Length: 142
Image (cartoon, rainbow, N blue to C red; front, top):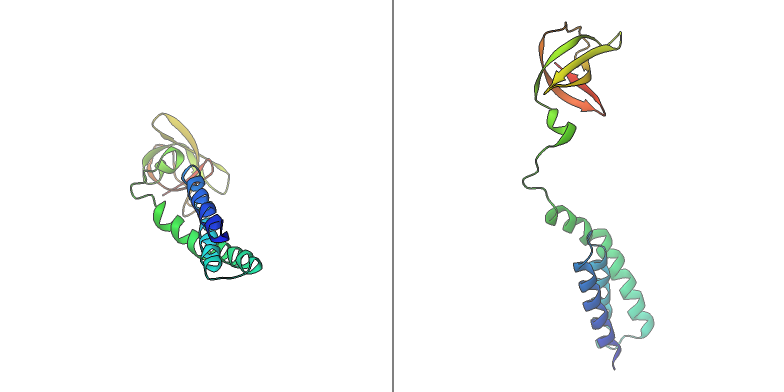
């Protein structure tokens, strides 16, 4: 069998393997083997085929894969969850927030969270505040 057909078989196997994996890494080898198949059918020697397979795979890993990841794995309807869902929520200060002294807690939905002030001001207990960001388990409020 002619080497070009072996490269086409490899291309098909790489594509099938990509279908059961994720990350668009294997499909780059399919592109490389397709380039090598074209070289084989054009009469290129085995060293040219290997070189073009390597170059095609490497170039597609560098240029094609990032584009595929960007456009095919976008979170169109991503919904914030867990601690990320707290940003923008209103809560009540249950212990005076004094960033300098390292004190302060807020309560959201029955859970108490360590909090710091966004502008380093002291916020007394009982004040309604808004979560502006989170850093690990510490909420920044204003």
